[in-house]
Image (cartoon, rainbow, N blue to C red):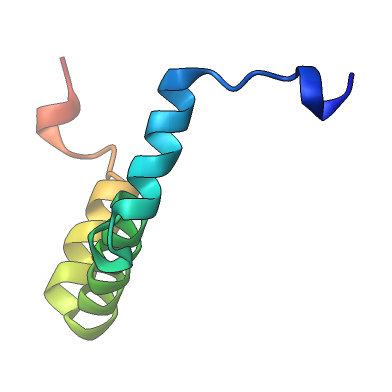
Amino acid sequence: MSFERWVLDPLMLARLMADLDTPMDEHECMIDAVSHERFMKEIESDPREREEWDRFLFPSHNNEADDF
């Protein structure tokens, strides 16, 4: 298939053009990356946050709230 015969979907083209118009610091992927980086720094620097995160990731099976 040659490129001369390939037709770009107008909706996809509009989306790609919108991505080009979005400043990098406002782009959804960049916002997610910055949020993740801040979250990781907070967990690494605050022992209480780290403890809470560990409890979330590794719940204790001795907790009465888990028993039904």
